[in-house]
Each structure stands twice: as C-alpha cells, then as structure tokens.
Image (cartoon, rainbow, N blue to C red):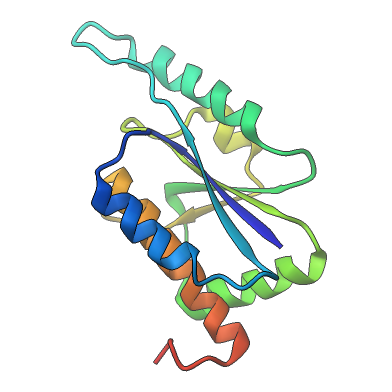
Length: 155
C-alpha cells in the first residue's frame, strides 16, 4: 500500500521536514509514505479567501491519483483512536487500494475536496498548525502500522 499526504504549503522549516522524515523512513516496504507538497496561493489583506481556497483545492484535486481512496483531514470529520486507525489501515491494505490524505491550507480544504473524499478524518477538535499536522499524521500512521505488526512501539 502506498500512502500519499497531499498538503498545501511548501518551504517548511527544517524541523518540520526532519520530523516528517523521521517517521516516513520507518515505514516498511509493504506500506510506503510520500509527502506531496502543493504550493499555497499568495494571500494579502485584500485576498478573496474563498477563491484562494478554491484554487488550492483545484491543485489538490489534480494531484489525486485515479482509484486512490481519498481521505480529507477536516476538523468536522470523524475522530479515531490509534487502534481504530490501525483497523482502517488493515482494511485498506486488504482492499489493495492506495491512499491520498488531503491537508488544506490555512483556510482549510475547498468544498470540492471535501466532496471528493470518501471519508473525513479529524485529528483533533483543536486547530493545529498545518506544518505540525504533517509530523503528527506521519507518526500516527507509523504507530498504527506497528499495532498491525504487533510491534511494541505502541504501548
């Protein structure tokens, strides 16, 4: 299974890249993790935020691979425990489909992205910084994989 994180924003601080890579490199060959960074639209005080979010959504939608399961990270999505995430991963792995996880920009995901998603997942009811979400997501996916493998990382 191949999991891709499609995230708005590039040029992250080095600590974000290092944190993400620390977990991504731990993934086994049978389940790889890839980060696809999509440049954010420029924002000014006079920007039309709805239009910017729509353009970012179009970029995300064009990056989604056909036949991939699409999951949008959204504060209004379902919350899962790590064990529940492991159960989802096991089912998805069994289906043989790859996964595209969508992370919006500072103003969230476009409605078109939310409509495209088969599922909406909330990492937390808190508003999290988007760079931190990449690290948190990579760690939780890795943790769920270790549960599936019976590895002692999750204790």
